[in-house]
Image 1 (cartoon, rainbow, N blue to C red):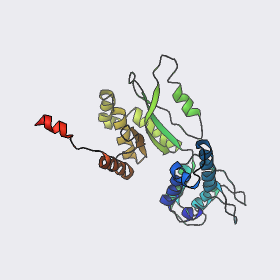
Image 2 (cartoon, helix red, strand yellow):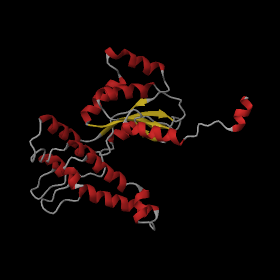
Image 3 (cartoon, one colour):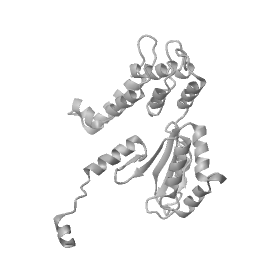
Image 4 (cartoon, rainbow, N blue to C red):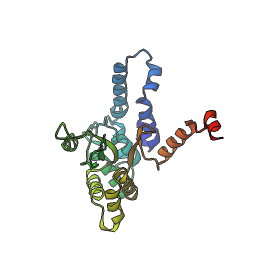
Length: 264
């Protein structure tokens, strides 16, 4: 992970994390583990890859990514809930103290790294599981703080209230960008009157459509739940298109012989 961080290989860093957190992959190495033991082992190994310092400067992969000016890797590392952003090296310096100290990067790169080091916030869309109430654009929530989640849960105050579930979200974003996005999503600007009309007229998917279009316009990550894929994904992204293509390739669109016979 240190090498990937130094060389700005964000895809390699993400692949490492995805592989280590894949139970099927880990079970190849530990086939006799019970499920709870396997999950504990995964958590332990991922923590080692994320937060183990090197022997020379006692620096973690995040230290490396920051000091060599590698924003894409900083983004991958800081998006993981297990990252320790406050670990100090042998000189008592945190990753935020070393931004671009070993590489002369532009101010834009430095600013991107600073933003990625902030709390990672998500702006959720919550819908009633029985579709009996209006969708709710929730407050920004960070896995590093339970306050936003607690505020969102206040929407369900009574046993008679419908059960709410997250159906889409934007993020991860910095706290400032998350608040700005939520404001635009909840109350679209005057020059985007069509967004307001969609929110009011399409109660089934209107909030998702407006959130999706806003996220794409503002360059923010976006994901929504698709039942046929059973996951959260942005279908317009390369990853989403790949998943959709795989799904269509697996699906059998052939008409049964009995149906053809009835049609004839």
